[in-house]
Image (cartoon, rainbow, N blue to C red; front, side, top):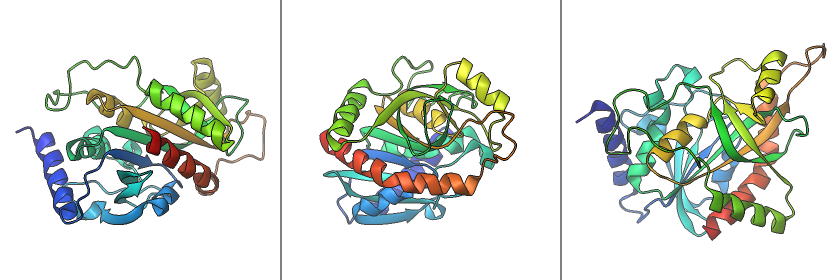
Length: 277
């Protein structure tokens, strides 16, 4: 067996064993970005599984990422939520970065919800905005480079619709009913760990990005490789600044605080969408 596949199946087997007495069979996977772990507080009858306890599983080191799977009920469905993701900038391989998505696939998820804290590239965006991701630009190494894992998908997967149109429609309708103003746009994933320069923001805007972050796109590519429908949302936690703004500094701790402030609205929205899919 391919060592990568063996690692995936071993991790999934451990989680299945932990869940064996609960009757839980995950239907929806959720990836919670920086400062967005509060959603896990709404999961009913939760089972916590630390990443460090799972054989061969990477451990998240980023600010605002607790490093646990939380399994339980949300919106009437069984969910498995990642309290913190794995990033390429932490020094992990792309196989490790995307391992959790493939593990959730083996566990049986039918949908994947991804979230992130992002910088607003679109000049009309403000801190605290919620942006439905409609498409993405991936500037992180593609996680499918290397021998194909045939158990999970084809060599050349289609990416025409990386984010599920049906779920986006449900999100727009649900957001309107809840009185939430939702932006829509293209997310650009880059490696980090540096924040963007003013010139980089200008470049990203010119090539069609509305928001930028250091995650998400590899997870979505791997999910779509396995034909898992994806819904994505960015919380805008800082916005592009011009080069002549002498006093502005991008602050990672402040980004987490802004994400935490928006997490209540995102949690309510995710819960309502999950109930409808």
